[in-house]
Amino acid sequence: MTLVFESLFGGTRRVAEAIADGIRETTPVSLMSVVDAPAVTECDVLVLGAPTHAHSLSGPASRAEAESWARDPVKHLRFEGNAGTTGVREWIDRCPSVGIGYVAFDTRVDMPRIFTGSAASAIAKRLRKQGLHEVLPSESFLVDKDSHLLPAELDRARRWGREIANTAAAAAPPETRVKR
Ligand SMILES: Cc1cc2nc3c(=O)[nH]c(=O)nc-3n(C[C@H](O)[C@H](O)[C@H](O)COP(=O)(O)O)c2cc1C
Image 1 (cartoon, rainbow, N blue to C red):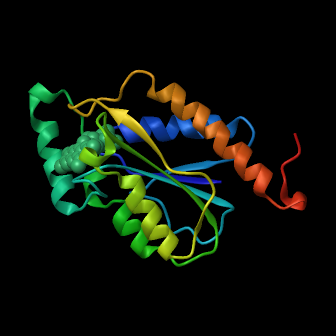
Image 2 (image 1 turned 180 degrees about the vertical axis):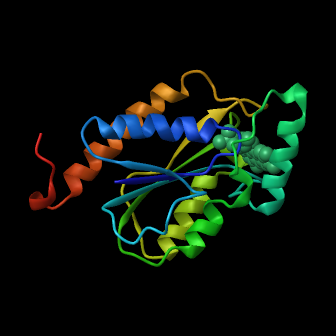
């Protein structure tokens, strides 16, 4: 399994790491930041996640805005290394159409989705268009209005990772299933 994530302030990265921990309990997974992830051409399931920006996926302008938020000492946010250089939107555009399974997730503010939008919905829409099929419904992990992850979200992410691995294992043809 391959898990690719985008993260400007580290929240989506920590969620991605927790999801990978949950998957890894039964299934090998390679975890990569979108900044250095090669285009995926072959894997059984692609897990793809990003922070919600302007109701959807980030772009150059929203990433620049995130960088300016991180310079504001009042916000207590730390910018992730070279995070501003690219994002999941651009990465999907570079990936060839492949008939593999996907699972999408995002981080977004803890408010009804109608007010926040969802990067995971945007990911799912784009991947479906490229011929990938959904393995498990998308999930959102919540941050407060200052972009800090809510306390219980990493445990929930780890549990969701286990669910991804179990669902993928049940869906795999018998000869490819990992023996436990
Ligand atoms: C420019 C910008 C626009 C944002 N727009 C939204 C939004 O429309 N909806 C939302 O729920 N969160 C929005 N957020 C908050 C992000 O979702 C939040 O910063 C992110 O989940 C934190 O993840 P990260 O630590 O991985 O960057 C926005 C953040 C930035 C920097």
